Image (cartoon, rainbow over all chains, first blue to last red; front, side, top):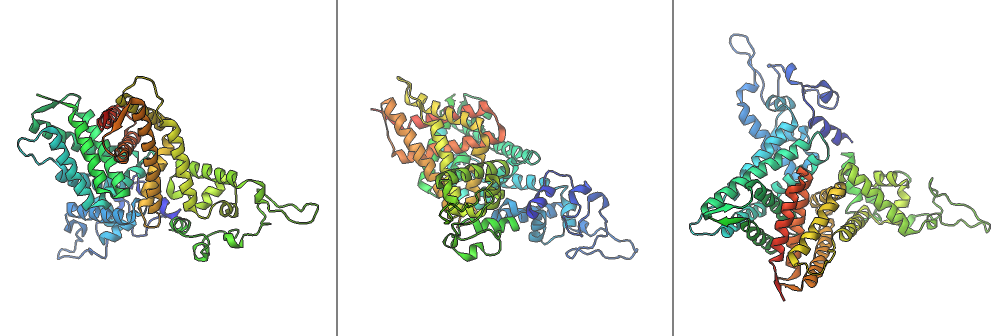
Amino acid sequence: MGVDDEQVHGVGTDVEDPEAHGSSVLATDASDDAFPAYWCEWDDCPTLVGDGVERSPVARIPASERRNALVEAALRVVSRQGIARATTRAIVAEAGMSLASFHYAFDSRDELIDELIATVVAREEQAVIPDIVPGQDLRRILESGLLRYLEHLEADPDHEQAMLELTQYALRSPERYPLAVAQYRRYAELAEHSLEIAAEAAGTTWRRPVAEVAHVLVAFTDGLTITWLVDRDDAAARAVVRTAADALSRMADTR
Amino acid sequence: MGVDDEQVHGVGTDVEDPEAHGSSVLATDASDDAFPAYWCEWDDCPTLVGDGVERSPVARIPASERRNALVEAALRVVSRQGIARATTRAIVAEAGMSLASFHYAFDSRDELIDELIATVVAREEQAVIPDIVPGQDLRRILESGLLRYLEHLEADPDHEQAMLELTQYALRSPERYPLAVAQYRRYAELAEHSLEIAAEAAGTTWRRPVAEVAHVLVAFTDGLTITWLVDRDDAAARAVVRTAADALSRMADTR
């Protein structure tokens, strides 16, 4: 139960709430409002400078770098061990930081997880935004986008598996549920953006609202992901890609 | 870590292996080959009958009923609390049985989980096998089958969520991986069976091997499930159903 208790503390609770920390975290932990600027961390110790005033040590590493380092550490932990084991403590250990550093960078584990999702979706976006080849029809453009996603999945299955786990994890409690909603809103935005680029390039218009088409694209992509993660059958996955691209292209009219 | 240790013991290890039980389970636990027929359980105590010979108490409840009761208990625990908390101990507590009863019914937690999957897939089968209306074309038959699945999902989301969690859980370790493979083999069988019935009723033949079409159907159904579980958007899910049915119907030729 210890692992799960820690998860509950880290997710869906405000770190400002003393109840949310209490006895379950290390003694080095401190809530933000009580955060001492002179806090001594093994990785980042304060120094007394000439004027005798202690400078905040954490300010020496820009907050954005600290956040990035924690997101990358979280992604490694979740990919390697699963979301259930990606406790705040495991993430800071992976990053070589203290819990205090964590709380300096993020208000809560939720906020970190949300940034982790944004990071992975941004990488998906780089992978899947269609590479427009003049003269391709809509079906071919969509197929090439989905194939690029599949290649991205095949190259880095752990990250996509982590994303699916994260959804399941978020669906498990009302407090975490907004994480899954935010995750799928980001997927929807990426899908809409890709679909608009594809339709524009092919000289077509979507017959249905692009949000509806995007929802279908996200569903098909999820199904492609989960079935491939189970059977690793590249040929079968390519049949899903072809069928999905054909189906989606029929939701548009030639202008 | 305790929770996970127990999972590792219960899954992917043979209960006959003394290392797999050892110190982590209750003292009432016994491996099958050492199982005493006169084992006293609170729910099922042996009685001395006239001839002075102790009858096996567990034999009084048929093994199949015991297995069913454990599967239903496991399904309730997984649906309510998630797969991570569905330890052997939690399942027997839910069923009101002892660990000894569990080991009398199942060789391992894997075997129970496999039967749980079979049970849920059998219910899906009852829900989705197309109800043939004479004169419907293939697209309509497929659409009605997928709509029936969606209604089944909407009526009982916890079970389908449990199935998705189970996949993620199985993908997390090489020992559990066969559970996910078995789960998707059952999905594939159900999909093939449905597709054969549908094509027969519509007087069409699949242009591609039915296994390939079934794989696409499973992928689309998974995507439908996961997106609906996140957004609970019935209208958007129906758009996925229509698009999927249309796409699948194009994989067949009229005879």
